[in-house]
Length: 481
Ligand SMILES: Cc1cc2nc3c(=O)[nH]c(=O)nc-3n(C[C@H](O)[C@H](O)[C@H](O)COP(=O)(O)OP(=O)(O)OC[C@H]3O[C@@H](n4cnc5c(N)ncnc54)[C@H](O)[C@@H]3O)c2cc1C
Image (cartoon, rainbow, N blue to C red; front, side):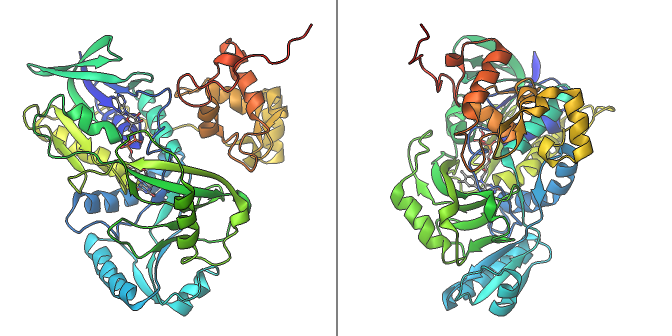
C-alpha cells in the first residue's frame, strides 16, 4: 500500500509531491493527461503576485505572500526562470484613486513588503509606455514573473530524484474509502491502495471530492481567461506588470512582460459551465485590446503571434479550500485554487505537508533530500566555446530545428527522453521552446514529428500534437511510385 496518492499534475500537485519527497514516505502522483501542467498551470499570466489583492485574513492572502517570498529559493534550487519585474496598479479617475488607497492599506495589512504610492510623473518616469491620463500608481516591487509549466516539470523532476513516482494517462475514476485507507480506481480498470489521498485536480476537484464527502462545502465554477501573446521582439516595451484597479470580476486585463521577452495582454474573466472549453472569442479579444490601452500606450498589436485561454478553478467557497475531509480526514482537499494559485503553490505545498499532514503524526524526515535540479543551459544561451564543446559531445547540436528559438536536434532528443517527458509537439514546446517563436511551429513542427517518430520508433501518424489522439499527420497524400 502507498502512503500518498496525489491527484493532479499541475503546479500544486507537483509541488506537493516535491514537499512530501522530503520525508520517508511513498508517493504516487496521478495525472489524467499525457503530460503534466496541461491545464491552469499552462494557461495563466505567469505572475508571482505580491499579495496586495486577496482579502485580508483569507488563506489566499496568507499563502500568496508566503509563496511570493519562497519563489527566490525555489528558482535557485529548481533552476526555473524568474524575473524581478515589480508591478504598478494604475488608477485613472478619482474613484479608482480612492480604491487604490484602500488597496495600499490592504497590501500593508497582508504583509506585502516595499509597497508605495506614486504620483503620475514618478510612475511615467519609471515606465515609459505607461498610458496617458494615469493619476496615481501603487508600486509593488516584490511582484515577479516565472515560466509556470517549467515550475511544475522541475518540481516533479526533483520529486522523482527524491523517490516519488508519477503516472500520466492515469485518470482517477473512483475513490472508495475503506477502513483506514482508500482504494483509488484509475481509468476504470486498475486499482491502487493508499493511506492518504491529496486532491489537487483543479477544475475537477469537486467531482473527485464527492466520492468521499456527502455535503461538499464548495463547487468549482470554471472562469475562463483569454489572452494575446506578443512576439519577444517587443522585449522591454514595459518593464513591469501593469494591473488596473481590481473590480468584482477580478484583477482585470493586464500587460505582463514574460521571462523570454514576450508580452501577454489579458486575461478576460467569464464564468462557464464546461470544464474543458478553452476557446477564444473575437469580442473578448477586442475587449482585451480596449482595456490594455488603458494601461499602456503604443502597444505593438502588430506583434501578436498567438491567442490562448485558460480556466480558473474558482469555487463557491471564495477562498482556497485546503482541509481534510470531514468524514475521512486522510483525504485532503486542495480545491478552489484559482489566482493566485501559481504564486501560492509552494506555500500551499508547505501548508498541506507541514500544517495538515505533519500535525498529528511526525513524518520521518529524509537525511539525504536533494533540493537541486540539474538543468542544462539552452544551446543558444551558451558562449561560443561552450557551443563548440556541446557540438563535440553531440553533433546533433549542429542541426537547428527551431530557427525562431534556436533549438537544436540534440535538445529535442534530450526532451523526448527526459525523466518527465511528453513526446508530443506541445510537450517538446513546453520543455525546449521549439515552436514558441514568431512562426509558432510553422517551420519546425514537421521536423519534430519526424524526430519523435524516429526516437520512439513509431509511425509519424501516431505522433500527437497535444492531447491523446491528436495526430497532426493523418495519411499520406502523395505516394512514391
Ligand atoms: C487565466 C488565468 C490566469 C491566471 N493567472 C495567474 C497568475 O498570474 N498568477 C498566479 O499566481 N495564478 C494565476 N492563475 C492561477 C493559477 O494558474 C492556478 O491557480 C494554478 O495553475 C493551479 O494549479 P493546479 O495544479 O491546482 O491546477 P491545474 O494546473 O489545473 O492542475 C490540475 C490537474 O489535475 C488533473 N486532473 C483533473 N482531474 C483528474 C483526474 N480525475 N485524475 C487525474 N488527474 C486529474 C488535470 O488534468 C490537471 O493537470 C491563473 C489562472 C488562470 C486560468
